[in-house]
Image 1 (tube, helix red, strand yellow):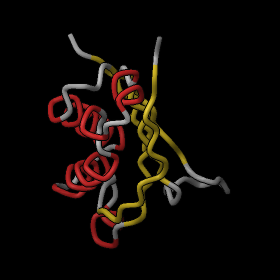
Image 2 (tube, rainbow, N blue to C red):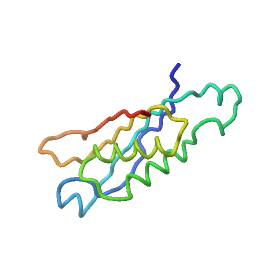
Image 3 (tube, helix red, strand yellow):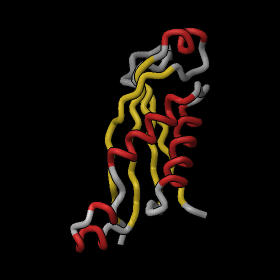
Image 4 (cartoon, rainbow, N blue to C red):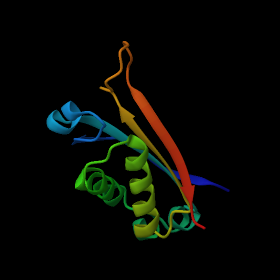
Length: 121
C-alpha cells in the first residue's frame, strides 16, 4: 500500500539561476511535493498528529528554497528533498518538482521543470 500527501505549486520568489540577471532580478518558482507514507493509522484514528502537517511541509519547503541562492533548480530540488526527509520521519519517499516558468531560453515555452524522487537509505 502506498499513500500520498500532495502539495501543489508552492510559490516562491528567489534569485536562483546561472545568469547575472537572474541573480539581480529574481523570479517566481513553483515547488510541488509528493510524499509517500502510510496514512492508514492517521485515517483510521482520524488523528491529525499521526499524519504529516501540510502547513509545516510548505513552510519548510519555502524556507529551504529561499535560504540561499542556487545555481540550478536541480540543487533546489535536492535541498528540499533532503530537508523534508530529515525533518519528517514519517515520509518514506518524496518526489519534488521545481518549475521555473521564466527560464531564460531563446524560445516561447511555458517553463522548465525538474522532478526528482528520493527515499530513505
